[in-house]
Image (cartoon, rainbow, N blue to C red; front, top):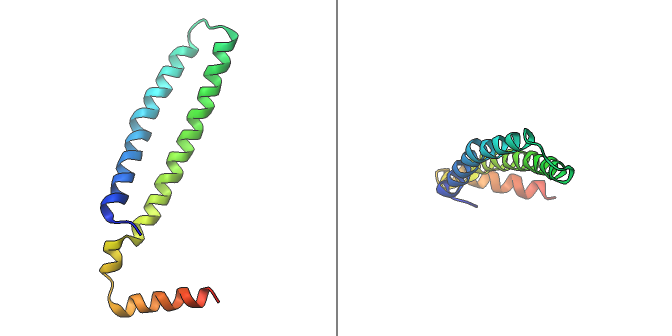
Length: 97
């Protein structure tokens, strides 16, 4: 179980990567594509473009997961009353049967 600070930090870092770094990489690849390149260089730029798309997908997946983890942080669990925690524990137990 994670705390609010950790989850919020993960979200902040990956949003920055998505918004800043990916944009910079895309711009650089676009510039390189506009140059007169050897065949091997063009192949490498296409490979890097594919890797950039993979990175974008991974960042999106991480942000979705972090948003889900945000719902169950330590602080959120501690804010629940005893009845709510007991009911959740019972439901988890019954779900394993």
